[in-house]
Length: 191
Image 1 (cartoon, rainbow, N blue to C red):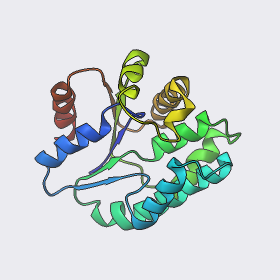
Image 2: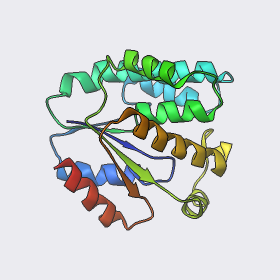
Image 3: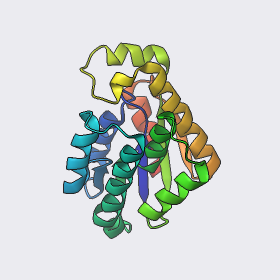
Image 4: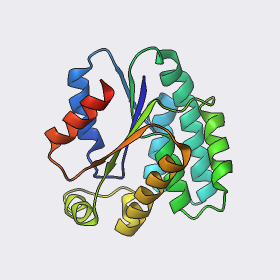
């Protein structure tokens, strides 16, 4: 089973993935970008503001996605693979950057990167504006977070729209709930 946990920064993805690691010892846990050696280099480029062009940023994400799928996901599809982010956030961030690419074209580019293999389930951790403000105030910001709260909220809205449009199995969880409540909902759906 291939599961992607999606959500904007501060939604609690990392916390939930750490809890899942304790329950599913034999699962493969990974992330996008950065789940491969190439991905780590791409992640560094993306988060440290070295890219000016939105198109270049998109293609860096797609390069990471293709490498990640071939190296990490595809060889383990018979097992549980849990990814911290995936193609949904990739498309959502690209759309929020104002790229003038049709949605269908964006899907085709991602299908190419993923060898036409979408996840079995996407878990979307949805966060409200007040919680984002509170959580962002407690950490230093990377290049993406510096784009602002309204930008992050537009990314989240895009994630919701993409999931509805594609018809992939997904669940949406209120990320302001208690950590254990969120974990229990995720566990019920994975099992």
